[in-house]
Image 1: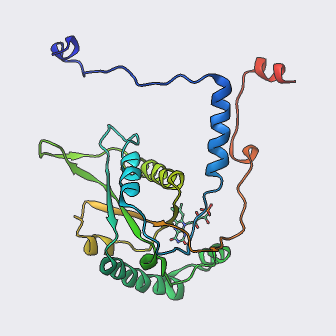
Image 2: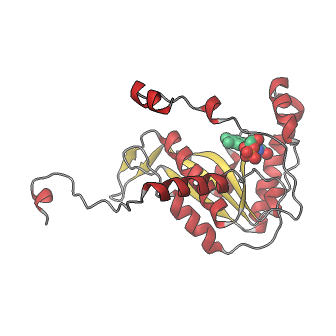
Image 3: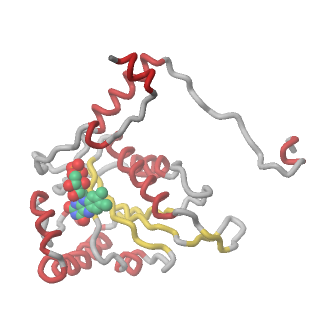
Length: 237
Ligand SMILES: Cc1cc2nc3c(=O)[nH]c(=O)nc-3n(C[C@H](O)[C@H](O)[C@H](O)COP(=O)(O)O)c2cc1C
């Protein structure tokens, strides 16, 4: 037993931090940006198989995300079974028809026009993997006791971003798919009520010659505000 454990303080371990020289840091930041800016939402997938190990590693990477009080309030349900994918597609398209034909406000439909989306969701069957992500609003600890989760939506959002990045880095395309309402996923995938469906991450290879909408991303000036010290500002001028 370490001294900390004897005194009742939480156990600690040395941080596994790798110091990188500033020039190399800038190069790595640039390389990462150049790679991640090529990520696009793909809606036309190939049915080409993908080794499951890639999905497992990407999910493990997502599972390293920070989370409120380290409660890790996520559950990833990885679906490759064709019958299950078909069930999800049929249920999703039923809801999508209702959305596109009846319930969607005009403003929302107008915003979706550039994406060219409609109620047909063939990617739910074509793509080799659907990763349904659930938010655990409460959880069961390793000791079997029910416990709260903290900031579960924010935590799962961060983990999902890491999952998208991991899959892109491994060489796969993704689509963040959010049918509305999504409760049918609990039923089809046999998840308990305290797990709320967050989104379905569709992943695989893009179809050959897949097209994506022409859109742009905002510039640094538009999305960020830097509050530098007066000294730094003067040094730059
Ligand atoms: C929370 C969220 C929900 C989304 N839901 C859908 C969806 O249900 N269907 C879809 O085709 N795209 C969906 N998208 C993808 C967005 O339309 C896409 O990210 C956006 O148009 C920007 O394009 P890009 O991802 O290629 O940069 C969603 C994205 C996010 C972040």
